[in-house]
Image 1 (cartoon, rainbow, N blue to C red):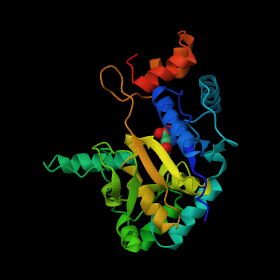
Image 2: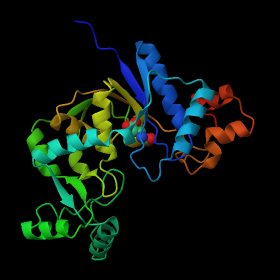
Image 3: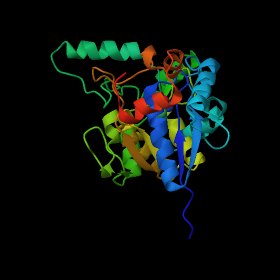
Image 4: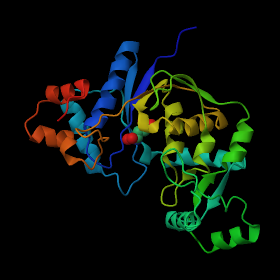
Length: 297
Ligand code: GLU
């Protein structure tokens, strides 16, 4: 049997400029694709149509071209595929695994603050956000119907306990890189650490978790190379892959590029944007060298 062609993807969100952190990740993807004789695809993760703009996307494409980072095939834009994510959500709904949640983030925050005032800390997810209290998991039918009828906006949340029981098996993934604490090899997923995650937001008919697993399967991605910041999210991705019967990719998480004071680079650090570095006179090779050597800028 011939082995499936190895396929990787670089998947920025066009809600800001391409910065050195992105370039580092794109280079790690390109390097592995070359080593494996595989393909590198480009995906725009633009489900947040308010924050992701055609202008940012255009600039990202320009910057990648300037850096000489190329990809195969057409760029996939998630905003053009909402109906595909909807189908996956419907399947989970038919399995009885998702439910409408009307509570707002502000309401969760004030609920948690109220609780913590009594002196006990509220559980947090791996990103440090308070876990959703789960109090809408089994709303009385009458209350649910009334909220729906009143046109109250809602998100679809995954009933994590039910989802984990249905998946039954111990879910693992193969980590070929390293997690933030050096985790490598066969990793046991812990999706419960995230609580009842949102699979479709109030203002967007999908979520990062749902669309990323649908696309990785649809685009035949065999190897996922991305930063440590998404290491723990892999637990949710693996659970969704099991529930939706999607293939399991290999994962390779890499360290994040940090600035001179050891902070993770972010889109808000305008001075690490590739376009700003270019305006300041750096060449494409110099930008790549900064990423390759982790040199301070
Ligand atoms: N769109 C995500 C980001 O820009 C990357 C998602 C992924 O690689 O799974 O951080």
